[in-house]
Length: 167
Image (cartoon, rainbow, N blue to C red; front, side, top):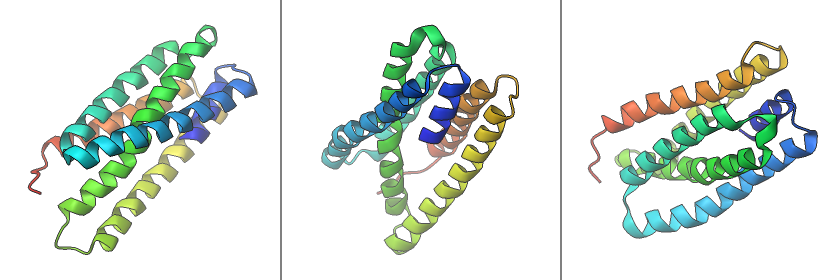
């Protein structure tokens, strides 16, 4: 994701230092989010509510990036990237843990490995297609990258809502 953030920032005519700053803010927000949200999930064991909240919040942040990722809104874009990191990085860890809990009869190492494998496959596809859109000057390339991530979140959210949680 940080690779795509850097490519989008440079494509939207931000200086290279701003692209580095956006990536750093994303990771910093993710570390803080992992601490805060991880502790909250550890106390409440409410995986589904946390995942649902983080996905909805991430989608609204992506909408904000579609609007405010312009040259004149560098500080606000930085805040949005920090908030996106706060939501997305802990979401990955919580989702993997939740997936391992849902596949209880299977060994946790096997189910976690499969979940991480498919996450990596999605990441490769997303980064490759996003980089192609951005580097080949396809019209609205950065917006297409953000929209693709939002659509994939909504698809996952649809299947998640249909899930019967019985832990």
